[in-house]
Length: 398
Image 1 (cartoon, rainbow, N blue to C red):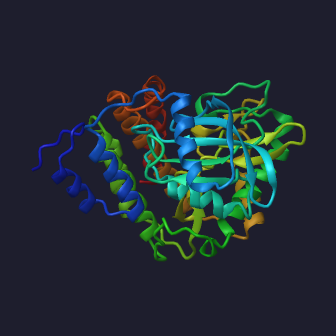
Image 2 (cartoon, rainbow, N blue to C red):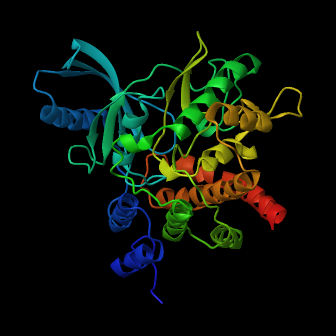
Image 3 (cartoon, rainbow, N blue to C red):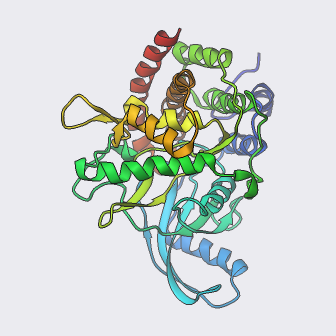
């Protein structure tokens, strides 16, 4: 038995996890890098000037004509990455001299979700042909110019919630109000259908391993989250162990592979209020190739929903009743939803939520590795709501 200090993981323990939970090559690199750096220094505040200097150095390698970084400012929202908004005065290819609003999105020392900036960059670039997303410009895959890996993309206009509304962290429980639900809900489902029926094989997704038809996609994904639990958890929770075993024993087979957003819900899209149009889809970092049921199940989780004004109708992601989402999705996509598979992914998504909220919220906050340690400590309490749902769903199916 290997003695484990998760705050100073040994090379032997890291290798044991890699063997036990094989996953995609790029994600293996991300997780391994996280553990190898864990014993190093914690997060220290990064100034706007540091980010501007880093950006300046990156752009010198990308642009031939003179440029100027203007109006840098912090961009709030989310619980995972450090973001700076700015305007770039530059000679944009095919456009000429322009002042373009942009965003730097950079990792902290450790995050509530450890992901790949390369994968995020490739997804956004690929889906731009079918969905409203911010344009991506440059990538610092390994943190050569910035303190940590980063991407630079265009600033998208819009809001995540009505200007007169309120919402919890990251849009959970967001109430759009009766006037916005119908127009936004229609686009919401149509965009998901477009994503899942898009021919991703023509895009550059070289940072993704392509699973075989059958159960390989979900097996890789279970390896992903079981490995994260082992890396980050502070104490054992038998319910999550049981859920992982049940998920292994009941993996559904697939006969088509779709690109999955991985965090498709209210709070992760922007909309413009004057025309009630979804203007940009954000937070693609959890994307992968797999079963379309995964996104459909995630967006219909009860703890990401709220009741309508009648106090009786549960609105999935604050937009429409669950059955209406299923019906509208099947009509828009031409795909058939299997309710047994939805039940499976409801359990999987609740399990994943438990891993993220209870394990990976704890570890970077405990070790001072993030700029949002207080927020992550607060988020940990939400894990027991998802665990309560997980317990009920396991009792229901088992």
